[in-house]
Amino acid sequence: MMMIDISKLKIFVKPGPTDFRKQINGLSIIVQEKMGFDPLNGNLYIFCNKTRNRLKILYWDKTGFCMWFKRLEKNKFPWPRNSEEALEIDIAKMQMLLSGIDFWNAHKELKYSKIN
Image 1: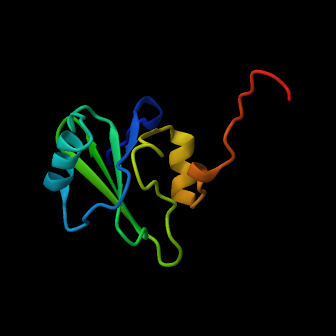
Image 2: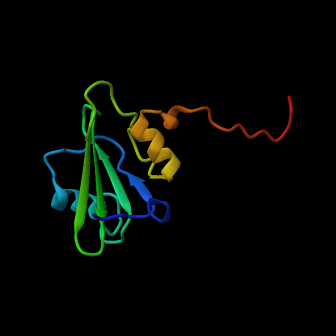
């Protein structure tokens, strides 16, 4: 059984919907050509389908690709629509994502230079 230390990896989300007919080869091409990363670098890449009820996670483990798949029976995953909303997330946000927590729409930190 393969075990990975996710805390040492970078986690990237591909915003917008992904065609889930694509398997490992198609997803690795998206990582390289659309996201601009090397799919062989050992990071996690997360994709979501159009109806937002399925996720695929692609990972290179030094001997081959691994792909995890999660399907929700009810509800939808929160998902960014464009690259301005998200790209790299940390493990805590990945756990929130898998739990259905929409951190993309959480309150944003306000920065003021003076009090009005």
